[in-house]
Length: 72
Image (tube, rainbow, N blue to C red; front, side, top):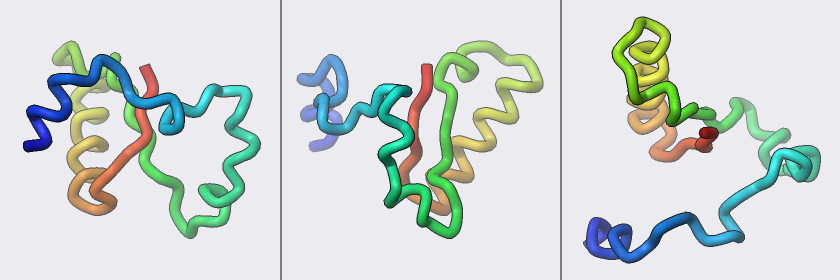
């Protein structure tokens, strides 16, 4: 299952991680009609209004895109 695979991985494989200085090279993402949603996982740890908005953003990303980019 996906949960079993995820349990064995401590961090994403390097080919799926983009450093900030490499952001300019993401031309394919720039050509998309809408940007891939960017979710700040650090904002999902508390219960204030801004964090609730981030949770709503995550929910919408999963419902519409099925994926999202992560920032910490």
